[in-house]
Amino acid sequence: MFNLQNQSTGYFISIAFILLFPLFALSQEKEHKPEEFRIMFYNVENLFDPFDDSLKNDDEFLPGGMRAWTWKKFEKKLQHTAKVIISAGGWRPPEIIGFCEVENRFSLIQLLKRTPLERFGYQIVHEESPDARGIDVALIYRPDRVRHLYHKAIPVIFEGDSAGATRDILYMKGLVGGKDTLHLFINHWPSKYGGATATITRRRDAALTLRAAVDSLQQKDSTALIVITGDFNDQPSDESVLVHLDAKDRQQDGHGFYLLNLMHPLMGKWDTGTHKFREEWSIIDQFIVSSPLLLKIKGLRLGEKRAEILRLPFLLEEDRAHNGTKPYRTYNGMRYQGGFSDHLPIMLHLEF
Image (cartoon, rainbow, N blue to C red; front, side):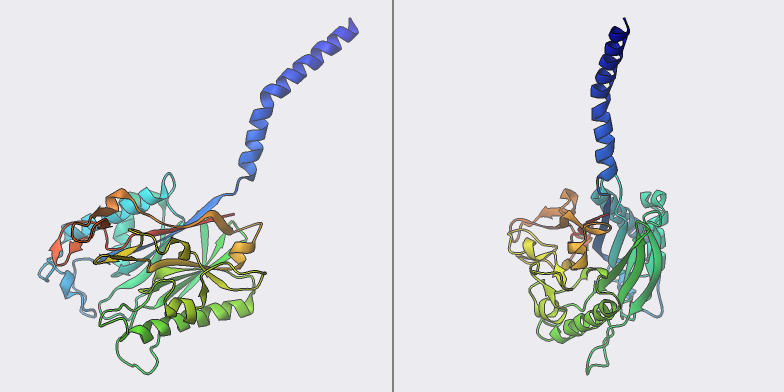
């Protein structure tokens, strides 16, 4: 009788273990699965308020200006920008979003208070740039996911050229996962307006300014976790990015410190890019990371998906003049069409 009871007890324990083991295994798998941390960058194409700033050349974006920019159009721009961010993030919006072509802090406040982004509690990092038109770089971040430690604006000084100030580079130092320090640089380098050759030295100077900031971090910490993003107005293979910034086009052997441009694998594909001029797509919006993010096994590191261009269907329209697709812009030339932007956003996938 005693043996029979022991056998029955063992039988029921075995059955319980078989039934509960999948749940236990699932909980263990969930516990050890890396947590995503995503950074998005978006050139929003002139996120201007409709009010006159006497210190900036913003007359184009006033109700009486050539674009007849009104509060109604501004509000539509805000809702469209929020839609992109929420759609890109899926069930959870990105932890950090970098912007360029934002006029001022007021525009960012409206974006976070007058759209569905309000419920996520984003905080703003922004400094006024000396750009004549008044367009700035900025970022927003979720304080429940990253702790802001420090930020500053890094001015870009043109060698031998005292005229034509450009956007500052925005630097932020943050804490991710309670222990990993992330260094983030948001860029909007000088455009090719006036000709690519005539403006090449301006992008060179922006690249050298950024490289000096990176070298300064590396000298203090050879394992610095650095993310560089923005609109560079040059492609990954152009001299400013590849040579002066020295952002490598492929992963290097060994464990030394270097910068890797994650957008190189996306180049050379038809109808693929972040910006289109006439028939040609280009990848001028980029993510560049320091090698420690590639080599880390624990803590904050590069995710399997790495970087991508967000080709959300509503951001594109048919290109009847040059075939394929093109970004669905706010303006087509001077004609208002109420689209989103002339750039597509990009996303970086990290994990910890």
